[in-house]
Image (tube, rainbow, N blue to C red; front, side):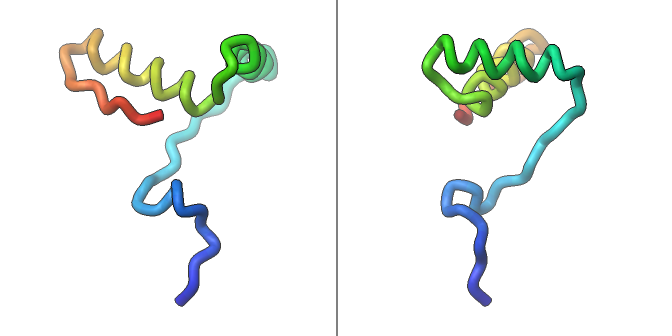
Length: 61
């Protein structure tokens, strides 16, 4: 069967959480200021968290 999932999402799973509108706005503003995406910022944050806990970072952006 044909899939409508984007090629970049093949074999991946969504990871999500709920935050205040202020957090969402702040993250989106930071992404725009840095010329990157929210997904890239979250990937960077996850890598930093993994390193902080002595785990291997995933390096996904």
